[in-house]
Length: 405
Image (cartoon, rainbow, N blue to C red; front, side, top):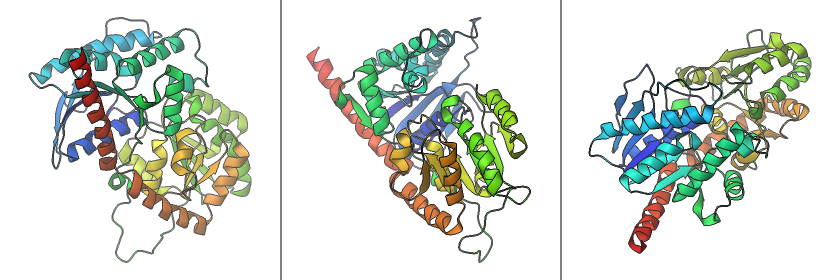
């Protein structure tokens, strides 16, 4: 099958979990023998047309240079619409090639997805990774928030089928955009376990080698992702005051960038824990793998989380995980024994969960369960097969619609 994936970000351009999700899906589809083109944004470190090696299918990445005319910096929707024009222009470089299915990921590429649908007369499938309503705590505010919500609604309306990564997200999308439930399909994200696995060990290693501790002898706690309020990093900082009393040498690394980073730095200073926290900014995946293998605990403290691909990355790395029992995170982890869970926004609960995860026997059992969970449920080829089933449904519906009209 010929598939066009449209995504605002794709490695090495990484802002959040969306890049990892589309990267994994594109390789999973190509591994299954499909002909895949990813349309995304220019990055200076890679060619604008890149042919990636695959064992079976074909995978190309076409990157558009979206140097925009002058537009107000605070008018995000206008800037995205203008940049989508450049993505559509870039698609002309594909010549006679055209997809059988267009798959758009989130509102940021809604215009491109719909434009390619109309140009090629093929079905559009949309994945909604998160909603503006959810990010805003259930309320759509006037202005930019309302505009983004409107584009999200339009994308799901234009799409023949809609994919969500969790049941929690599917229910949110059905309710928010008044969609027929049978139009929305649950297909989880996945993880490339080989990428996150430990480097080769020396000869005859111990069965469960001890993890290196923090710089001054205490445990090392790592959290990462887009630094936004809804990601809940502030809960981790609030928990750190309690943890440093029981674990005086504890260190916390928060990796990532985003609009809430300065607020977090201010909060760390006000709480008097800034000497225990290191804000690294963005960390490439290769360095993040090493960081996770040095960590004693990985924390995913989200207040709102449609899925939580970072939790899968930590599980695949064999790092003990502490996660907020919210949204898709709870669906993935609750009842598996692979992670310690706590109530979102509860710093005392987070601190207690970290203490449990630091127990060696508890950590070893959780790590084993996590590795099994990743291998059995979240391999990208399995996710690709489920996605193709949605594509086939969209193609069948599209064919019936064209026959009727």
